[in-house]
Image (tube, rainbow, N blue to C red; front, side, top):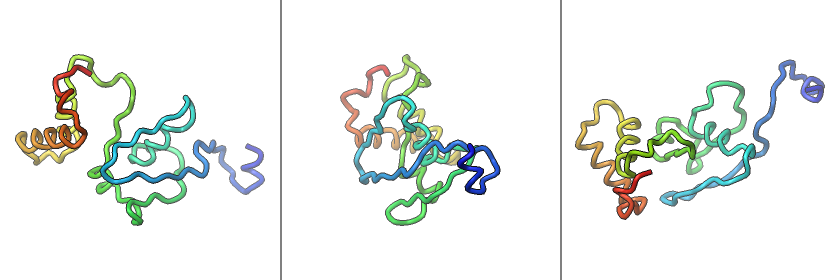
Length: 133
């Protein structure tokens, strides 16, 4: 922390990411892989707008434009690899649940099911539709 104070920063702050950059191709499922503690979750939380504390500095662009959180939430999905998914539901039920949570409250049940069906097709999950997570 002495280095930060010598740079004029009075607060004790820990830098979790440094010089992070990347590009994601549209329409391509992307996996972020790295060793424990590498910053994968921190990076994804920042991108997804889930970081509510601390300081976020730098810029995030989507197709060359500054990131708009509402737009970003519609064009991206963030599936954490942890045990929050019930092992008793199918892949399709999990997609429907995600659609239910992500879509605005005025979207009817039939439209939510269509979204789940579209996701299933988009990610080629039809073969796994009835598989348990």
